[in-house]
Image (cartoon, rainbow, N blue to C red; front, side, top):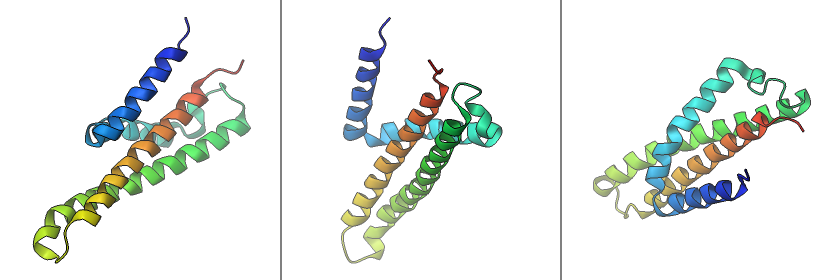
Length: 129
């Protein structure tokens, strides 16, 4: 069975959902991020278990950790930005538009960095031909 058309369809639907409703995709990305962080903390390099060569496993693990750290930091920026946008109307002279744009951009970065780490995780789970 050829899984390529299904994979392409899921990627296109994920991108469209991210563009038109980033909050729903962000809510879906949070459990994925938590699962990957727990998986890395629990097993470290054993998450790829003889499916890839050790040098490639180390590189994938470093990239995954970087993506997950960036995703965590950006998610904190999103939370702070959401509170600042909510409170900016009474406290600041300017409109909350810059804060809203930063908040929305940080949510998109969170989604894409979580998707990148998930892609690396799945790439590491493939068996060597």
